[in-house]
Image 1 (cartoon, one colour):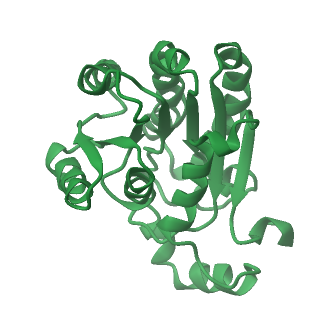
Image 2: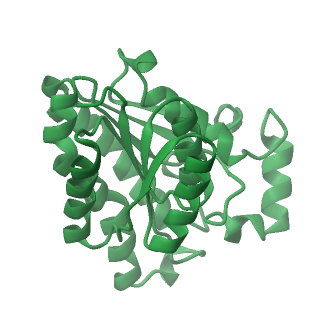
Image 3: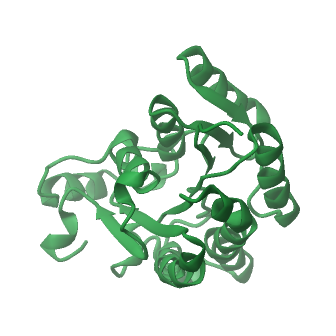
Length: 252
């Protein structure tokens, strides 16, 4: 079996997930680039390989549980091991107050952001245990730490995800698997486009964040890489807030 650590990153065809895949590959990981579209995944994987890294594209719709199992199985078949899982894929179909969220949208948000993260962590568990250095990293959000008029249900899902981190840390810890999360502030990604299109919101974040800027995907990728590495070997059950200091101002 190769000693190269192997990492699955969901939602990694763009944004934070892509930045994490590229950075982890540059640090010696073999990465699985995964999102709904195989062609989009392959484009990112090819770029990583062209830069000298190891990468394989495996499409997976996180809302389809059978595909989650296949993602893990194909990874282990390809590389013979699995050392870490970065749970980055998420859904937020509604930008607006909670009275605009119907049951279908609510179920999609909660299932994709909470249940499927939990499920994939458990599917990966036997392989992460065998690794001896297993790590699960969830990408949460500061939206789960404060009230919000525009993405409140998404924030509810992220608050639940933060609790999932604590639960999984207890459940998977005896297998030597660490479970942590990073909770970003506003990041310049396609996923956050609805917020980025709101000029007042952008000006507010830029003016109230102590570092006076929005995050780039690479800012969050660095935290993910730390949490997936042995450098964070004594951390588990933690949610690391990466928001340029916004949370110390009292929220948004």
